[in-house]
Length: 417
Ligand SMILES: Nc1ncnc2c1ncn2[C@@H]1O[C@H](COP(=O)(O)OP(=O)(O)O)[C@@H](O)[C@H]1O
Ligand SMILES: [Mg+2]
Image (cartoon, rainbow, N blue to C red):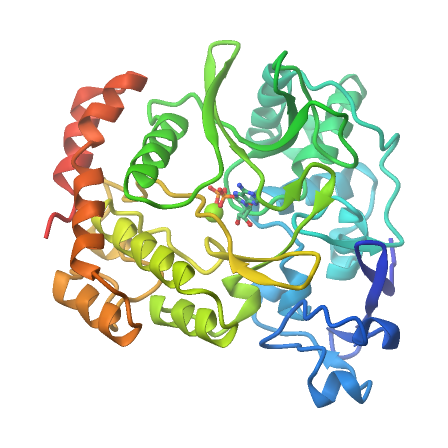
């Protein structure tokens, strides 16, 4: 597998060309001249189509920092994280391709048109028939557990070949560390099909986040946090719990799909790579001139994460969406859940993004500072709304049947300031 150049596409247009410089071990990217005239600023802060570099057809260089793998951050965003990477590695082994011989450009070609967001990559690796197929969630879930737990060499026997192809096609593109699948669900019948490519009328795009059926209720907790976030006034995509076999998984509608239309997305990590604080999100909101509602939303989300101890607030858990007209907005919130490891020492449970320079022991005063610096109106009311939603935790967990002692420990760790 040696793909030296890929074409980056968006909504059928060629955005530009990405090449791998073997000697420097880095990618170079150049916009297609005709795309520069469309006014679609896909990476407005770090790789703007209006910048002299783009306009003068000078190549952009990739970023050597680990998360970007030598790609421009705007494009690295189309690659998966831990879970998707482990599937790609297993796929390489299955195809007898030494992973040391592949570049991130090969990985983009493998992802092809399956990336989250709207960017697509050509040439794409052919992975069998691209049309939608019916998904047996329970079997695929069992199989992905096997892929995760077994040594790669034992996983991919031929009996599993079809399941393996299905898994690759619907699970290898989304980011994040937890196993998940990209599916479409029929609103009326509940039938699940692959969510790649065009989906038929009556279906909706979802991300299915697998529960791991351990004693820790990942899916139920994420669902309770979803309900709590809604109560706090946070915008999220409609989400639900669904049981397949006797295991309950978390499903969330995709904000990067509207029917068969693709919405271009950039995580904070792609939009503004140096970001390591909530203040940095507000500064992106200002740079993009987003409406006040997005600042207010972001303030609520920050307070929510601090009160309800979602310390997994890293820069890939915040996203911006661009409409086909080129208009940017903050995306709905996602991946909100309790992320404290109760058995770990306090230093292991610090927030990824800082608030007023702190990543632990954050106080109401710190929130006030952020509110004042970012013109958040009625911030005390917003903080109180979030606190009131967190008080509902116990009641909400009762609706999903969760271990009482765990519920007690989680609630006791909340930040009620
Ligand atoms: N509702 C959604 N619509 C579109 N993309 C989403 C949605 N939820 C999450 N994502 C994308 O998928 C990635 C993984 O999802 P996430 O919920 O963060 O999983 P994990 O718990 O494994 O981190 C996110 O980083 C984000 O880019
Ligand atoms: Mg995540």
